[in-house]
Image (cartoon, rainbow, N blue to C red; front, side, top):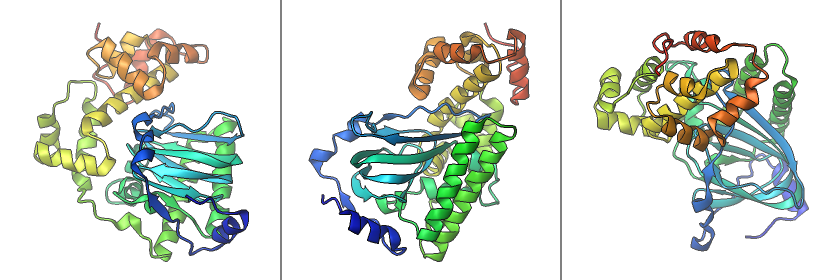
Length: 348
């Protein structure tokens, strides 16, 4: 694949109508999919947005193939790379955007250093909370729709690019500032980014957000409400389907279309993020947190937590322990504040 010159890159970046040219990945290049690992950002219900920024220098740690159970919205500010998404690849230039939903494998090979980037990760619940009758589902569709690489990678117009760069940089400052109202401000900045982006796509006739995935959001919303209210209990497909008002097979299809992952995988992620929230806000022991969020086996909790968060729950809790002012009794109280009154009495 030819790497474009600096003059070519400049022309393409300045052309608002330039489309990213994708190419199928050859069989010999698909090896990276085997190495695609679960990306682990410390997201939870209390802190559902995580911002990464940095610079890849020649000789520094290279990007690793990844997939994750949340959404990703990122921009490259300097440098160039070849991005791989599922079975396609394309050249990524400064200003190019990357959108990835839950379960989408992606990777990049840097072709020009230094490469400066900003990436925002967020839980789908940030958009779901807007409600099924509002714009939340349309925003979420943009990330989870079945689409080719040109849907995941976008080259915005110079005007939109400058506006989004300003918002990305504002998110970095807000995320690193640890000031009062940070979580509210991060949500506001993220929503402003996504609204500006989707409005621009509509104007350009690239309205991916209207793609019909045969998702009934009222059914999905009912299923999510059931999971939120009963995640501390054993949950079976027949009970979840009954709460959502559809058959088990229909629920399976709808949930996979909506989030790109099975409902049981979503539930595991939700429980782990609830446990992480407990560790962040209290002095819960590992066993107390595990049973409080619905795991019946401590070994299973340890394995799932590590696969999603990249470290054991005890390591995660110990890292936060010196920062938390709550006592052990407060762990029970935090469960109630987080919306769960049923597990205030911990299983032993």
